[in-house]
Image (cartoon, rainbow, N blue to C red):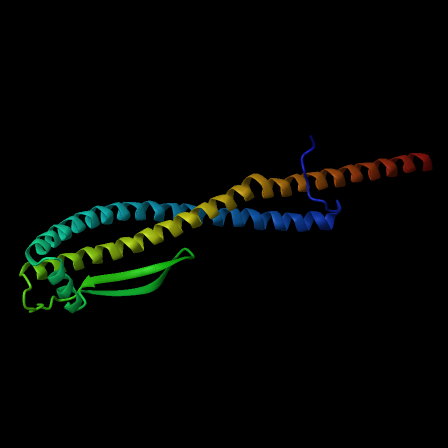
Amino acid sequence: MAQQILRVPPTKNTLLALKKQTKFLEDGHDLLERKRELLTRLVYERIGEYRRLREEAEAKLKEAYRFLGITHLRMGSRALHQAALGASPALDVNILPRRSLGVEYPSVHAEPLPLKPSGLLGTDASFDSTCRQLAEAAAVLANLAEVEIALYRLMEEQRKAQKRVNALKYNIIPLYRRTLHFIQSTLEEEERNTLFQVKILRERAT
């Protein structure tokens, strides 16, 4: 089966144009390959950060739910619900757009606010500790969410870059190189035929 080439006229102008286009594609491949490598490095860095934050979040949630269980036993569901409705915000969250290698994802900054004692009648002392523990857990979860979204989007971009690199390397650039080789061979054959005809004409003239 003959290898596929571009359907273009085998002329010198076409040859020059294809050489420029092939060089452009090769440069594009090199840039994409570097981008893919940088994205892969970022993905691995984020994976380590994701694992660390996930472990921290699990530990924080476990501790927060332990405090919540104690408060629930001491106050009961109804009193705990009423106290929660009257509690002030315990977490400050700021979300801004962030970009790395053309990949945009939210940058999350979350930290617990200073605790304001509830002072409600029937509120157990453990209620404030539970609020503080839940706020700390929520802050870690917010940071984990940033890393998880960033990791997902970086991996998606890395996969796209890999597909483009493979398409250029194994399909598009070889197609252009085969076409260049075909045009060069055709022009050389035409030149040999022309020289042969000139030689024949000269021999006849002498």
